[in-house]
Image 1 (cartoon, rainbow, N blue to C red):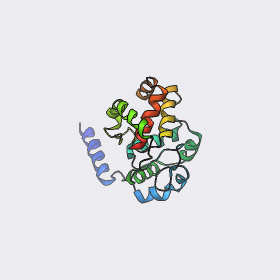
Image 2 (image 1 turned 135 degrees about the vertical axis):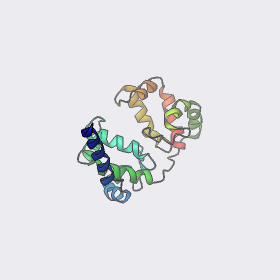
Image 3 (image 1 turned 45 degrees about the vertical axis):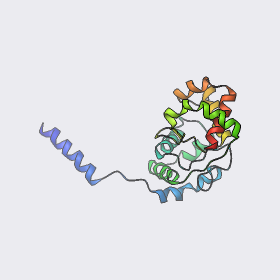
Image 4 (image 1 turned 90 degrees about the vertical axis):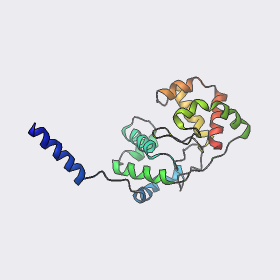
Length: 186
């Protein structure tokens, strides 16, 4: 019992003496230069091929960067860009992009209205305004082309994410387009 007490006491003291390092937004901003070509100067992408990162939750961004770094999520560019990132770099980048304001990508108004009618299935995880929720990404303001591409990848199984694969398989191509236009319009 005395040994258990000593180990527990030592652990508590270590936590007090060496607290977890908080993410450094400025360090993330400095490290973000390598991201700007695709994800934009302020984390708002100018292309439907790449997601906007501004306003995403740091938990989601950290998770995805770690998946790219490990190869669990496959994208040749992102796998190469993230392979040498340390955990602190990932935390700092995530904190920086989470601190930035997002921007609407716009969307076709008539298709967006159809998408709004179908979006209830998305709100349980992604939030009532598709603003994101912890590990679930912010869809609001993303380029409709990017959302369409990701939903098609989930539907085909090219991108793996359990529940998203199952949900995407129930969507028609018209549903995907309408949902993407709605998300982009927010």
